[in-house]
Length: 75
Image (cartoon, rainbow, N blue to C red):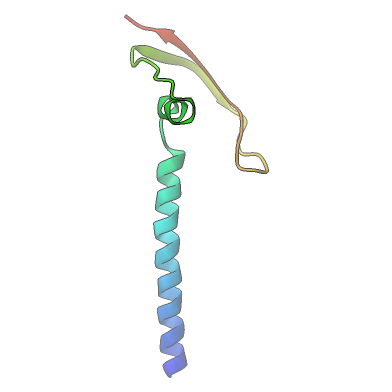
């Protein structure tokens, strides 16, 4: 009976840890493209630009991929 309780507690801790880690990963993945450019290369894009085309190659083996964005300046 004690082993069953320990197993349930251990499983609950592992599931809770998985939820916490996945929430951090989701937050990082959903960053706006302009924020990623700013954090990687310290380039601040103006907010007056509008994205007119975007494509993503998806994740590669290392988790990175190629993204293309075309933006035009709006008035």
